[in-house]
Image 1 (cartoon, rainbow, N blue to C red):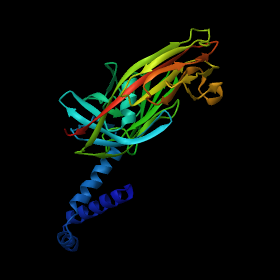
Image 2: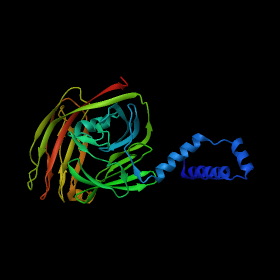
Image 3: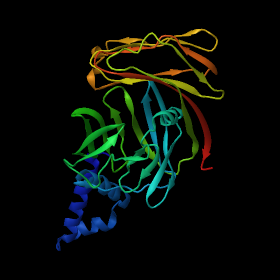
Image 4: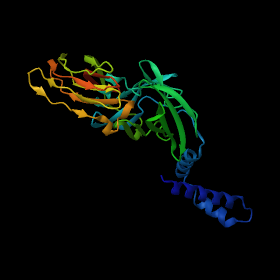
Length: 333
């Protein structure tokens, strides 16, 4: 429902009430009796108006089976799925996902909004520590801080017609942007400023039924440069086990100028092409850090890292390869 319709209903209601209050207006009273108010429409209008006018937002209540239809982005891929409340008690909820991509990311990086969610403020968790996305009650200009992806992030809320926009700064630079929607009972969008990672929520669907995915991740290769020396000229190997769903190579680190390249050979001895990016400063990465991922096929056997090379005279980098196995199950079981 749009705000024009909402305010039309409210104005019409005001006129009707004014007519009822006037003692010498029998025509208005007759009209009111003949045409009863559409109570469902009025309730809808009142709810939307309350969201628009409320100065603060309190923490919502979730129920098992509440699900959010999500479009997630990461590692150059986009996938649709659901985030689902799979368990609830007085102190916490558990969020699962139908998305194999999101389940894989959770297995590798411990995605903070999958798994345990604290009930009173919807805080997620990473490595057992809370990530406080919201500080309820939310209000215009409210500021708080939290640990998120290893960064100390300062968050500020700004009131909007549909809830609150929230911006997070890490070391004084933009890090994350998202919102809170009372109508959706969560955010509708989440975007990490560096790189195209995030999600968009399209709708809230109660009493969801479907198939959930979960992942198990394992580090199979890890190498790092030592500042200021380059990580180059070496070689290594890793083994992918049977029954894996995919592997993921992750490059992360920091520096104002850098180049990277690494060559892989698959278990059959064939070169596997990987991306090579140089001078990331031109890509806008800058000195705050680099985070790039490349998805690999889960071909079992021994892979060889032919020539890892990441370097920066002022920074350091790591190259890590995970293997991930995804399993699925019906919900409710």
